[in-house]
Every structure is written in C-alpha cells, then in structure tokens.
Image 1 (cartoon, rainbow, N blue to C red):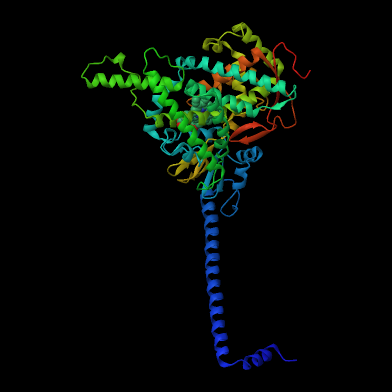
Image 2: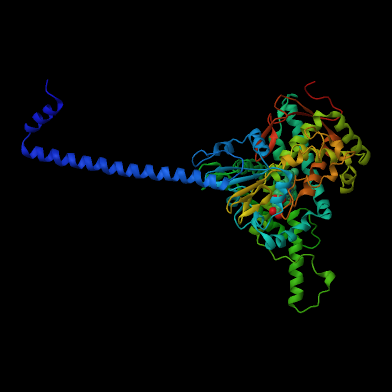
Length: 541
Ligand code: HEM
C-alpha cells in the first residue's frame, strides 16, 4: 500500500504546470490566511488574558486586607447577584467584617456594615459624596442638587428646609387626607370584589404612596389619571435602580425604560410648576403643596430683590429667611422629582411592613386605636398636626417598624479622594463606591435589646429614643434625609386614619417575614390583606 506521502507525490506529478502553480499559490495564500487569522486570534486571546489578569490584580490591589472573594468572576463579578438581590447574601456580607468588598464590572465597592463604620462614611463629606446608585445620575440628571457637594449642597439645601417645617406639614395634611380617604375606599372595594379573599397589597400601597407624595409635592396641579400613570411608570424607575448597572444605557434594558419613565415624570412636574407659578401670583392664593410653598418663597425673594434694586432700605425682619433665585420650571421639576425619587420606594416599603406588623399584633393595634379614639373621637373629623403629636403608640409603631425593617438598607456613596480608614488599616481608593449599611446598627442588641422582635413599647417605656447614634434609618451627616419628619408624620397619619375607620386582616404565610429586596425591602409574599370597614363583617365571613 502506498504511503500517504507517495500518494501525494504521485498526484502532484499528474497535474500540468499551470494547475500546479495555481495550487501552490492557493496553498501559500491559505497558509498565510490561517497564519494571519491565527495571529489575530492569538492577539485577541492575549489581550483578553491580559485584561482578565489586570481585572483580577486591580481587584486584589483595591481589596487589600478586606474580607471578600479571593478572585472575582472575570469582569462581571457578582453582577447577577445585583440583578436578583437576595437579602441573605447582603446579610452575609455585612457580618463578614466591619468593612468588606465586591467588584462588579469596573466598579469596586466597599461595604461599611457596623454602626461606627457606617457613621464614619456618612460623616466624611471631605472624602465621599452620595452617588445613590450608578444609574441615578442618568435618571435624575448629573446637575441635580442631590449630587452637589460641600458648600454648594449646604446652600441649596437651606433653601429647601422651609418646605419641611411644622407649618409646612400642616399645609399638606388636608391634601394627604383626601388621598387616603379615596384610596381606603378603593382598598375596601378590591376586597369586596375578591369576596374577602386576601390580595397581595404591596402594589396598591405603592400606588397609594405615590398618590400621597404627588398630592403633597404638586397638589391639585396634576390629575388623578396622571398620578396613576406616574405610579405605574415609577415601577420602571425602581427596577432600573440596581446597585451596579451595565456602564451604558442599552435600548430595551431596565435603565432604558427607567430613563424614559423619569423623563416623563420630570416633564409632568415641570408643567405643574408652570401652573403653580401662575396661581401663586394671584392675590390671596393659599399654598397647598410643596410647589406652592417653594414658589411663594421665590416670589418673596423676587419682591425683596426689586426693593433693593430700587434703592429701598429693607428692614432685616422683612428680608426672606432664605433669598432664592426664581428657578425655571425644569429646575423646580428636577428637585421635586428628587423628593419623589427619595420617598417613593422608602415609604412604600415602610407602609407595607407597618400594616403587616400591626395586623399581626392585634394587642398593639388595639392601643393605637384606643389612643386615636381618645385624641380624635370623631373619626370623620380632620386630623390636625397637634393630634398626631399626642399619639405616642402610633408614633412608636412607626418608629419600631422603621427600625425593625429599615426601608433603606444601603446608601451608596462615591469616594472622591483616597479615604483612609485607620480603624481597619485600609484606604478606600478614589473612584470606588462605598456603601454604609443601616441594618446592623438598627439590630444592635446593645442599643435595642432583643432586636429581632418588633416591640413598639421600647419607644415608650424602653430607651430606644436615646439610641440616636444607632438610629441610621434616615442616614446622618450633611445628606441626612430632609423628609424624615414628614415621612414619620405621613406614616402616622396613615396608621391612625386606617385603624380608626377600617379593619385589615393579614394572611400570614411562611414567607411573610422573609425579605424581598427591590431597591428597598418588602415582605416576600407581597402582603396578603383583606380590608373591611370597622363594625362591618368582612365580606368573606
Ligand atoms: C420612610 C421613608 C424614608 C426613608 C427611610 C428615607 C431614608 C433616607 C436615607 C437613608 C437617605 C440618605 C441619607 C444620607 O446619605 O445620610 C435619605 C436622603 C434623602 N431623602 Fe429620605 N427617606 C424617606 C423618606 C423621604 C421623603 C418623604 C422625602 C421627601 C419628601 C425624602 C427626601 C430625601 C432627600 C431629598 C434626600 C437626600 C438629601 C441630601 O442629599 O441632602 N426622603 N433618605
């Protein structure tokens, strides 16, 4: 049998010269092509390998001595965990060390878990500034006031303080009660239509909170339908808020839908601002919402400036507390949007847990009802701020819910310059994200004995009120929540009104106490509730 080489030679001699020439030139071309491709391929492979090695070493360099995975999944890191966040995984991270770390895509993230570490981050404005989450810059616009830093931020924020004073809260109460009245009737109707079968209520509570916020922020300048649309669209904004997103917004991804939704909200609020400017210039126009109050301040500032320009000597007591410029409709809208952005998920989370926990502890709810009936005997009468001030059990339930299930478990900050943390012998690198967590400080057994039980009484006969250092529900430092008093009063109003007029039964499932993370935290089973009017028997029974 001829060897393959012989066969090759034999076949070679049987071709005419021209064919031979063609074959040999084709062979050379093929070989150089393969060789060429091989070198492109190998260059690509080498580049990839270099990038993988660089990614790993850069992670290791930034991680230094912190607890965290020894190596990261190339490039993406635990990205898929942030797409489907699990509370248990976050918790594991928090207890892994006072500081720990992960790296997702290009982003190195340091997690500050304990009370003292979290406070250190909140109170180090020289080194850090808030970044909410990566995508927030795109949704809120980079020029938004919440991203301002230092003196500029302090000055801007001073101009907003007047919107959250006691006097201001008083103005918002009637509008909020109108919304509660409407929605409670809807809840009742939903339960009636379901013939008393429990329904998952987290979605309706989200809409309720959105409607209350919109009424507080933009009053009656926005129609009920527009509010409903915002509440629906808002879901897409929340869905876009993953801890770390893909670096650019790709069409049809969650950030893309989130951006579209936020653009619509900003436009709607700007229209409201334009209407408010017209109304508040009219004689005797009474402010009803945040927009109105802010525009009143701008108009007062405008009049003050005009008097000064005319050379008038304006007495000090007639000078506005804060002289504001006349912001454009768009600027006003961007700021009002930050209020919605900051409050929507947090208050939705808080009210879901509040209704669940109160329903599961009827003896506590009875105390809330008892004090409510004593302070405001006529359940149809308007609730006043001084009524709420006197409701200690109602307040205790709200505060204990915020402690037991803090809606905001993490507050992402950006490291502006290398941030030394000598306690941990670590320097958080410039450009990394650093995230104080609120959970451990609010479940610290030294501050709140038996921290995993919901016990409102710790705010009445216990010393929970004295644990200011641990109370990180609303953050601390220069960016602490500007809406904290408003949030607590609003939740008190909800609990007081609902308990005065309605019954709600919670269907407890094995997942009721489990935590679903969706920007903030919700009961895993989405809160199965049935509503009935007090004194009436629930439709099902
Ligand atoms: C239960 C409800 C709420 C919770 C748990 C909550 C929590 C927080 C937290 C943890 C921060 C970050 C603080 C920091 O970085 O130190 C924050 C900031 C903020 N919150 Fe709230 N919040 C709530 C409701 C509200 C409401 C109702 C509003 C507005 C009406 C609001 C407006 C803001 C704003 C504007 C900021 C940023 C402040 C700044 O950067 O100066 N929040 N909130």
